[in-house]
Length: 341
Image (cartoon, rainbow, N blue to C red; front, side):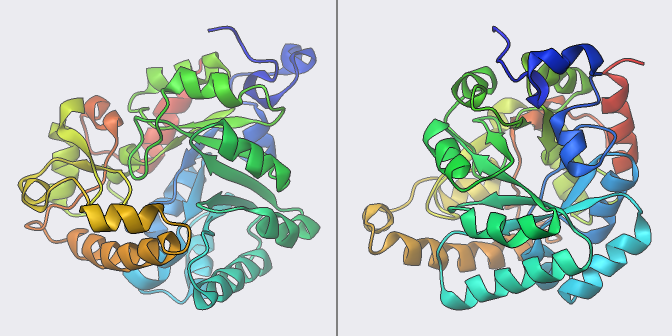
């Protein structure tokens, strides 16, 4: 594939002074390795977030996971993470219109994060202009999750500083495009683009940067680590999974989510019912339907995090390349080493 103009997030005029580890992402996030430990509900426990940052990447806090699943007051949770690492940490803001109460809570979390020194934010599922406006006066940087060009353009209209390109190999809410196809769509927009999905080995990490990505966001790889508090059964299932064992289910949130195809998921089924699909398509009802699905799925996923019989486990196609449970720091260091000296 032909390199985009802004290879690794910089104009080619700057390439002579660049190294594989120095990209627009490392500059924006203040990190050494262009690698993000992505926000995961319910798997983003404080120790995992801190370990990724301590090793030179950046861990992203998922607020609902931190508070509801892992039981921390949000401010105290951030301070606990800061006690474990001096490295930068980020915050994920799910900003889809759901309810006034949820918006107020998310606004409060962002304000607390800023007060506690967080300056890197990843937004998802909505128009991020208000987040940009809120964090920019503090020197904050916002990267926005996108699955295709039209969402990237909406993010740029809102003033985001970078894009997280979620491809069809990702865990969670995967997009419809392949790794190279999605970069072709959004790589010419003048902002750094991070690859999210399908990277389960150091070689795949290096390849993403060679293609022109400014960095990579990993999720599934970090579940299979010692610091992650997911059940041993969940971690073993990732090690044993091939690509064919990762399926898309509409039964969790109403839109396709990548899950391991466990017996529990097979019993649950993969398709939303016709009424649910119709309500999810309608402008007046889709936000309420997604809220209802989200509440239900948050409860299901929280229970399945440590319940070895429930087997409702999110994962992406990268599971096929994961063969060992190791420390999160070793993951970051091995991936960094793939970029050369």
